[in-house]
Image (cartoon, rainbow, N blue to C red; front, side, top):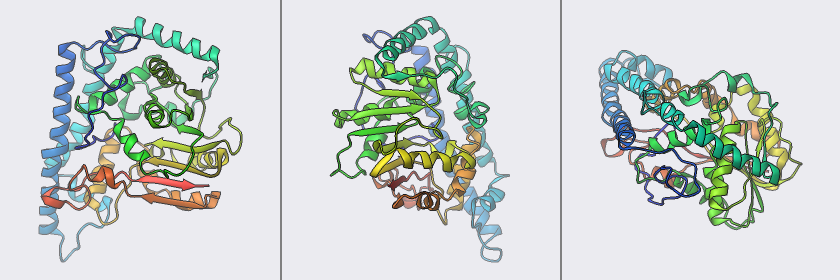
Length: 394
């Protein structure tokens, strides 16, 4: 939810991401009245304005200031910090930061129509449905929850994405998180298409008998994977019990089996050489540097020889100081405190030190093609955030 899939096409509707109304049979969804939908349509339009005209205005003002005050005598900014020095006093940049921060706050907290107040009105029904499904799956052995799990301070003390209380402290946090993801995008989009695009980059000549979603959240990535790999044994871990309960409910609604487990990524309880694929989506920037290496060592341990670790992540771009400055701004504004450090972390070097035989960052061309101007400001558009695919092989 840190950025919008600008222009990403795809009109597939599933039970997960279609209109969330409680009249769908056997599904756990929030009832959306016209006022709720209108409010979030306004939120989406405001976000589009922020990421369009406001962003572009900041880009023009930045270029004007650089031309007038820096080049050629003093040299143009060469990194994000220098670009931020130029941007800091500009009204368009200040407006961008304010909107990024406060639109998200309005989205979650606004009285009556915000995500949290809305979900609260249906707490009794939603909790009962989630917990009944969780109890059934725990008895069946497909859902493992750990009531004594120790939440790391970096996870417990930060409301990532400005989600009030984090995504772990309330039974309905998974529902709020999923609803927040969907209402960020226009109604015709299925944001699971992002996963499907990523899957197309994985080697197609391999057999993926057992896969692990490393940070399964609401389960959308695993459920999308099973659309084309129904024979696969699909596992997902997350430290958030509320998210796992929702992922479990979604799997039961679709009639598929997910093996879900509440675990901390630095101490997995799977045996060695267990998975053909460990996949993730926007996980690395959520983890501070210190626990990153132990977590990657665990990934390496549970992968089979020849297995892949692959996922989508943000990445600053060399020689794009404006783009990188705006990416950092969006992260700070949206409670992503470890993003800046993650951008400096030597993932490839660490992966090779751990033992991965191959570690590379692959351009996500199929996504970038949906976002004209993403890298070089083609057609007069400013550059936007770049999301490549990290791919390590054991």
